[in-house]
Amino acid sequence: MKFLIMNGAGNRFGVFDARQTPGFTLSDAQTIEIAKPGGKMMGEKGADQIVILRAPKSPDADIFMEIRNQKGFEVDACGNATRTTAWLHMRDAKTDTCVVETNDGLLYCTRAGEFEISVDMGPPKLDWAQIPLEEPMHTHHIDVKLGPIDNPVLSNPGAVSMGNPHCVFFVEDFEQVKPHLAGPMIEFHPLFPEQVNVGFARVDADDRIRLKVWERGVGMTLACGTGACAAVVAAHRQKRTGRDVTVEVDGGTLHIYWRESDDHVIMTGPVELESEGSV
Ligand SMILES: N[C@@H](CCC[C@H](N)C(=O)O)C(=O)O
Image (cartoon, rainbow, N blue to C red; front, side, top):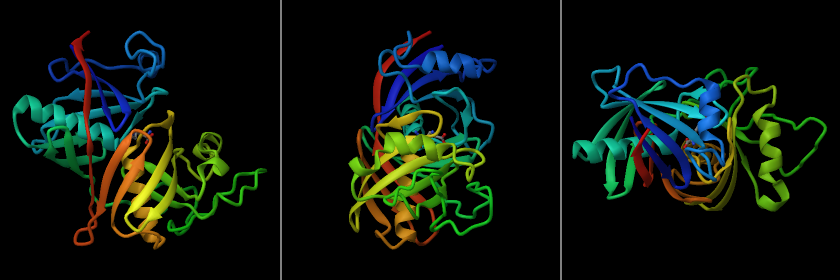
């Protein structure tokens, strides 16, 4: 089977191309072993997610993408892996468009450059039950307290689902907040029954955000595509930015546009193929 290492703005993936091998599956334990930093397959950096490419179930899709976090469990969305998957299909099929199927539905992708892909991520889900949250509340500003730790610089985050749950804090200074310490406390906060990806966004201008994300089931990553979409949606809802925003992450730059006409979020960003071989 083909095995590739790819990344989207530094968000790193081990990719099994199982389109010709429909019986191929990975258990949580096998995924952890493959993805762990320092392991045999992914080397020192490890993989943030393991992606299994399959033949699509929908007649309208070109390819199905199964996504597993570094900690083993399966999830329904990954923005950066959608771009890498679409790029691979476009390269192999020699096209400039691709429909990627995930557990959450179909994602329409177009080529924006040689190593640049745009994905229509669809509309954000903003109802408390869709995120999901444990109890009814408005998701513009949610009330999440860090238990015994009272950190006044962490308040009024927005909650957004982009097919996966996100909680986005707006901060002025990453040093003060320490995302790697605050992230895990919020990931497992009882307000989020399915846990949550935690974004820390510094708004630098109406069209510019600097973002760090503690990913559910991983930890700090160099980029999170759905996290960037969620940050722009949350920022615009709190009147902090416009709808068309450049999001700088540790591994690169993503461009996010929350289109008013149909409520869809369009994400554009880079793709890198690090290696391609077989296992
Ligand atoms: N890296 C991703 C998100 C991957 C899944 C996430 N950790 C979750 O548990 O929902 C992205 O680029 O969106």
